[in-house]
Length: 147
Image (cartoon, rainbow, N blue to C red; front, side):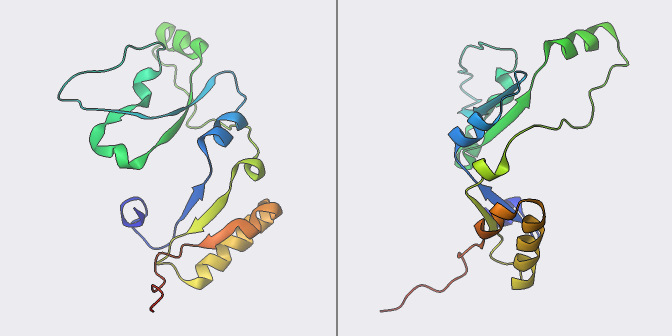
């Protein structure tokens, strides 16, 4: 997965649980959901309960990802877009959440240098000191124990 989602050697993965992320997001226009995977060839999809449901579908070939998505959906934005062709959403939206309560581990790419891992740890410590001890280098490159 590291090679697929982090093609260089410098990168991190953040580990948490779905429940922690979902519970941390309190914005009424924001939805946190697990992605549902479907066989697009069979055409069998669940019935949509919400306008945003299609944003949480993906081809079954990607099921290994076990993806979770955070989506902001505001009906007022849909109205503005309908009424004004020039309307554009901002490039990003600042989401209020508590990373210290949510993040369980910050895992550094196993192919990265020890210096990079130290840099990540220092950067994390400068913005969220309580998370600095949660920065770990992936142990996927360690040799197995020989008996």
